[in-house]
Image 1 (tube, rainbow, N blue to C red):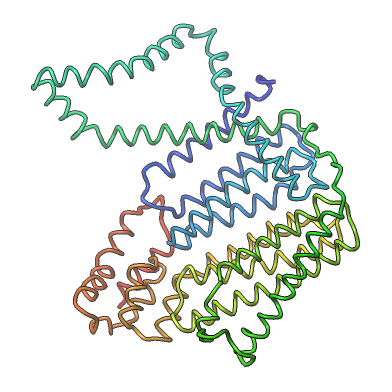
Image 2 (cartoon, rainbow, N blue to C red):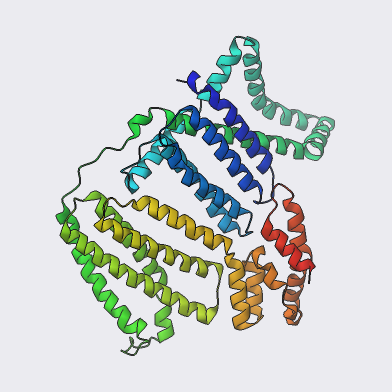
Length: 472
């Protein structure tokens, strides 16, 4: 089977080479992300077609999703958004490979998660395979080269021990080593090590993932498992439904009515509204997970379906309560990236709950794919909208360029907010330390960051920020 997969070495090597060239010692993420995503997708399709899988077309939506995530990387300078994009790309790559080689027709959350976990462990088991193939190919032609390579590798730890001892034994030799490794070759050496590491990581990742997925793909079909007695879930869900119903009545009475029915003693309406946002957010998320778990682990029951529907309805009220509390808080204290992200997450929970309701009454509904692609679409909208810029515009329009607003723009938001900052000449009225930092950020830091990113990590958000500053 190893020899049948030897053709994977070429696309894996090309993927590793591109990854190393695009990301070796770059200062940030930009155009290199979509370029590599396109190379990775093309190499995957080329390699997958050699196995003649039946489900290659099913992997195309995941490929499109990872390309869009990679494209959004170069449209924003917010590092949190970019890190989430990278996590999403990694997940979509695993799903793309899994979907191609497995029969996922009846899978739900459990099936996809178990298949992806097995793919990761199967890929780890293939790590020695590329080296074995390469040695097998070159063994007959150059038998000694293998032993030379082993000798060079073994000499590295010996040099790490001997060189420091010799350098400490002789001052002239020690000075020579410092001149060589610290001044002249340190930067080059770091570049070489980084390039080799990135090449090997991408090469092994590509080869091992596809080799692991293609190994006995027929064995990966999920078998139906016996589910538990629904009376357990009915009892637990009934207790929760009663508690949630009481809580929702309180929410409607105290919060949504503006406190007209009376508040707890010593509690103001604004203070009451701001309490418990994250607790309610967690409970809402827990309810979504609970409903998904009940539908997957227990036999279907009409009573259970009704109770899960009641819990889902209460979850909508919990989400609305959380959103209302956050809206009141934003009205008083302004927008930040995290507050916008919290609102986005509440919207995602609402969409996921809607899909879960559909799945409760129609078990053929593909809840996993629905949640995945809804999450992908909503995240793309969130990231491409540049939330830092939205927060800066909202705060400046609502409160003016106060010290707090200026500090938030300058120290908490990314370069995405620079076009908004460049509009305000009133920054000259700020206190001297803040004014000086603001001026330096716009006139020096933005340009330095744009130059440091270079061609490989060209970023459109940085380009727009620099142009906004220069056109002042």
